[in-house]
Amino acid sequence: MSANILLNDTIVALATAQGLSAIAVIRLSGEDAIAITQKVFKGKNLLEQPSHTVHFGLLHDGAKTIDEVLVTIFKAPNSFTKENSTEISCHGSPVIVKEIIKVLLKNGARLAEPGEFTKRAFLHGRFDLAQAEAVADLINAETDNARQAALNQMRGGFSKEISILREELIHFASLIELELDFGEEDVEFAKRDDLKKLIKRIQAYLLPLIQSFDEGNVIKNGVPTVIAGKPNAGKSTLLNTLLNEEKAIVSDIPGTTRDVIEDEMVLGGINFRFIDTAGLRETQDVIEAIGVERTRDRMKKASLIIYLFDLTQTTLAEIINEEEHLASLGIPYIKVGNKVDKADASLVEELKKHDFIFISASHKTNIVELKDKILASFQVKTVKAGDVLVTNLRHYQNLLQTNDALDRVLESMYNGVTGDFLAMDIRQSLHYLGEITGTITTDDLLDNIFSKFCIGK
Image (tube, rainbow, N blue to C red):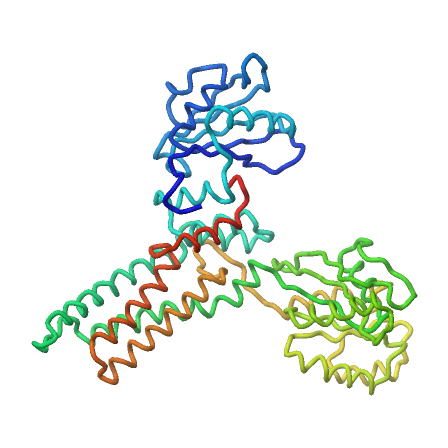
């Protein structure tokens, strides 16, 4: 949907989760939202009621009563979208929800597209693009740290400071552009020393934001953690033990796990996504071979690998050989010796020199120590109100591109490059900064961002 069309339509969508529930909330937004709701509502005349009031009544389709409801009214510009809006709270039966939406469509509304409510809020100036993206992050937050980081960004985060710095840079850009109009007169409206100071001040602000992304990404997206090793090393047992449930099938038969099995748990405020994989070995079984290939692929994409060695079936030479392959992946890994209760004491003593953690997955021995080791691999601070972290890959890329463009501006000034090339690099940095907050957008960019939202948001 183009950013410039269909804004006069009234849109409708279910704002609460699909399925059975005590109540459901259906949301409308648009110039005719209150009028359309009034057409199907029996109770007070909603058109005559003040904003931010709630009204009990019946919703009907002609002579048929659909449900008893509460209707909340929000009049423009005092609503989330800055448009006339209503929220219909009804009983949470999917049949009731379907009937209400159907009668609203019959009376002039249309179904909202994914993220269209938030998109309208952005287009009407309710907040900038970075804040709009934080709305989706807040909805999808799975840990308290992720919730606080999204909330901080939704309340302004780095957007306000970036907007101020961008305005200062625009001022210098306009002066340099003015110099170009007087090219033959050798005038300098933009003082180069002042411009250098501004650029260094902007970069001093951008650099900590860029550096915060690794931590912010962990907080927002969690840590994909692959449990790998040879067949029968105890990978599925370990997954079940970590999650405290029978998630994976456990068997003494090698090759039981033929596809990846995933589940999540929160450790120390970080969401770890544990991935149980097929045992690594050469096999003639076509299905198992596909599972082994998927294991290798997941290991390459993991942020952390927990590599299990069966201490009852592995020699020191084999362990050293497997570790060489692990190290070549360039991904953080934890070496875990399983079945320590049955292992040869001399092997365990030797492996203590190789930074191993020893467990018995089946007897839950040293599992707390293993969890501590996993958590120690990704230390993040507790996010507090006001903390600024970059959690969005798009923002991170724009910040890097901005910083690179500013480096080119400084280099151009040191090398005495003419004003036209200087202006070009400044315009590029302004473009990348503007893309973060939405000062500069394209329909494709907006569609890509808001298509990832749920329908009713």
